[in-house]
Image (cartoon, rainbow, N blue to C red; front, side, top):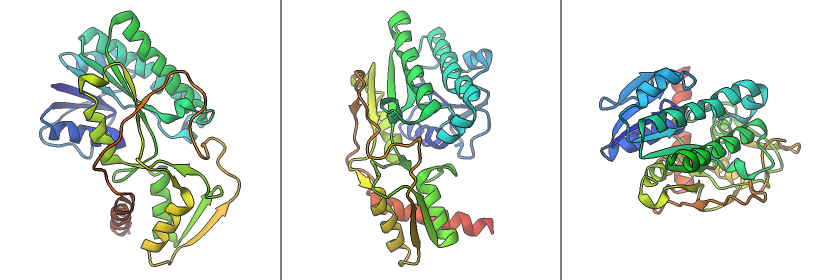
Length: 292
């Protein structure tokens, strides 16, 4: 199929684009900047998701639209609520409208497990409202969709604010890890490559008009993750906890009561957490050496 990935230059978007290409799909990447991971067989269109005219031209003739374009950093969303609405909500409506006019077979929206939560502030609000627009377009215009609710991602190409990236980078560059919280917090980490594979698996008809949860297979306390990293670095890392936990992040679970439930999709086989972290330590170490 001909597939356009909005936000395809980013963390999730670039990996999903690669997976789509590997499976033989014709891939167009639409983003504000050229993807540093662009492959020869992929087409690149420079454009903003708020530019409705350019977006409609880009989507024309496509079979599937992935909207993975958004401000994804919770702290940035808190600092920039207007931009959060502009890109995360209005941008998504622009994408939906372009998909409707192009009569695409499926609209796939990159959401978050934070839609279930009391946490996440403006980020959560933008994702929750965008999910409603996605469902409204199905009800009113018959636009088929799949909503992907991503959990805690880690792995190559991660942003500077990514949780695992910050921990690994600080451990390597400073010989210490300072964690804001008690360490009792839990996350279901999922490797970015596993998430990308599952993000393409949902093109199957059974995931049409479904909400799919993409998190890891097991829950892990943060303190065990930190100890794992410390051990991999020959115990040469000092770990300390700032007991004042992050106010806008959940502690044990993102879930609070919400009647719109999602199906959890898991990857078997999947990237082992220990192996995934070890590989990522090697990537960050190489990047730090190159930057010196």
